[in-house]
Amino acid sequence: MNVTGIAVGLGLIFGLFLVLVLYLAIHTDGKVMGKYDEKQILARGRSYTYAFYTLVASNMIMMALYAMNAPVPFEPYIAFFIALIPSGFVQGFFAIWNDADEGLNAKKKAVFKSYIWIGIANLVSAIFFIATGMMYVDGKFTIGLVALLCGFMMFFLAAVTCIRNRIRAKEEEED
Image (cartoon, rainbow, N blue to C red; front, side, top):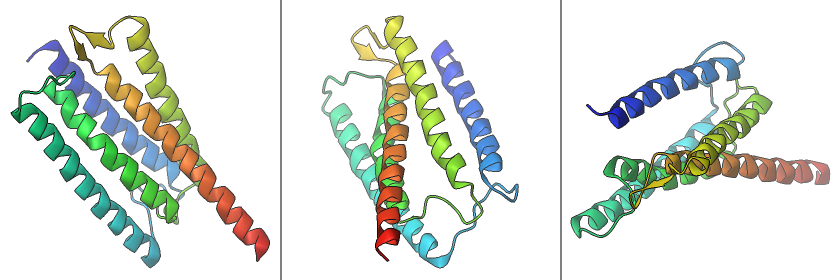
């Protein structure tokens, strides 16, 4: 196994650990899983369905690019992650827009703050890769591109949350 493989493996383990800690911190009852009402469960199901089909489409695009030996500017392990990004945008947008992103036992401000802090951490990491010249090496993007895309996705989710909350607040004022 090479250094990149070890780094990616350790990053995945560390990321899963952080997700566990974040889930424990976000939920008011100290449980990892969120509690959702029937409307939220249905919306979450649809969001995961749309995300699945988006993932299938993006994987098919990546598969076609590699099968045609097209000049792809990133390593295959990064391509797998890049194929995940559109489905993350789709799932996150649909769940947030339909009030299915936060469980009934979640601290809503903590969820929003987690989008911001995770986005900042990823963008700082991406800036490090850009500043050190390690974002694009030997004609290929490195793992720094993944951090940049994740940062953008987190800020997108925060923006969708803000827009949804403003629309809901205006609707409540009108009632």
